[in-house]
Amino acid sequence: MLTIAKFGGSSLATAARFRAVKALIAADPARQGIVVSAPGRRAPEDSKLTDLLYAAHTLRQSGGDWLSPLGEIESRFSEIAQALSLPLDLSALKDGLRKNTLSRDAVASRGEYYCAALLARYLDRKLIDSADWLCFAPDGTVDAERSYAQLRRLADAPFVTPGFYGALNGEIKTLSRGGSDVTGALAAAALQADLYENWTDVPGVLTADPKIDPCAKPIPHLTYSELSALAEKGLQVLHEGAVRPVREKGIPMRIASSFQPELPGTWISGE
Image 1 (tube, one colour):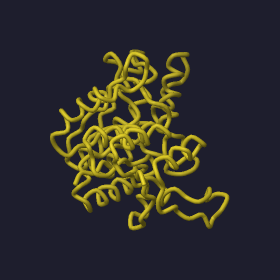
Image 2: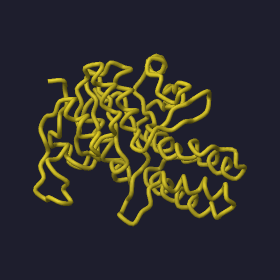
Image 3: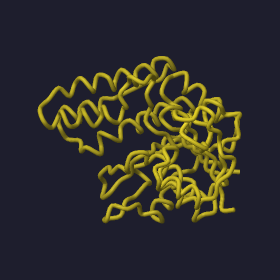
Image 4: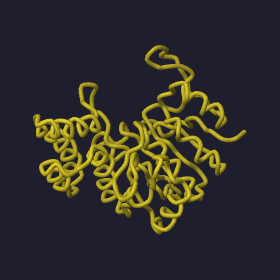
C-alpha cells in the first residue's frame, strides 16, 4: 500500500500543527510520500507567506523596503524551527534578494521549499526538491511523463517534496495558486499510488460554504467528474488541475481535515 499525502498551509501553520501532522503520518505507514504547501496563516490578521515573498521580490525590484516582508517571513519560519529544535538557513533567499539574482517565481517558491525542508528534517525523511522532478514543457504545461520518470528515479525512500513549483530549462517555475494540490496528484500518478490524500482544514467537500451555512456537512463520495465540475466552478477545497493526473491512473482520492483526522472526509473515485 502506498499513499501520497498532501498537506495544505493551514495544516502546517505552526509548530503545534507540525507535531499533529507528524503524528498523522506516523499513524499510517503507507504515507510514504508527503507533499506540502507553504505554512498558512496562524491567525486571520496574518499575511500569506507567498504574498510576503511576492512583496519582497516586487519591493526589491522597485527599490522599496523589501527587508520588511523578508523579516516577517524569517520570523514565521524561525518560530516553527526554534519550537521544534530544527536548523533553519534562509541565507540563499536573503542573499538572492540582496543581490537581486532571484526570479519572481524562484522567490515565491521558497515558502514551500523551506516548509518541506523543515518537515523532512522533523520526520527524518529524504527531501526531494520539486525542481528536480516536476518538469515543464516549453509551452509552460507540465511534462507529465518526464516528471513521472524523474520522481520514480528519486523516490527510493520515504520522502517530503514541496508543492507549487517545478523547473523549466533549469529555472524555477511556479504553478498557479493552489498548485500544491496538483503537485500531490502528479506525485501520486508518478508512483502509481494506491491513494492520494489531500489534507486541509475542512472535513471534506461540504454541501455548502460553512461561512454561509453552519450546518454544511461533508459529502461522503464524489466521482472524478463531479469533483472536476465543482473545481471548475470555483470550489476552494481543491485546485482544478489536481483531478486529471489521478483520474487518468485510476487512483482514488480522499479529502479530509488534518484537524479532525478521525472523520472520514470525502472520497473521490471513478464510480
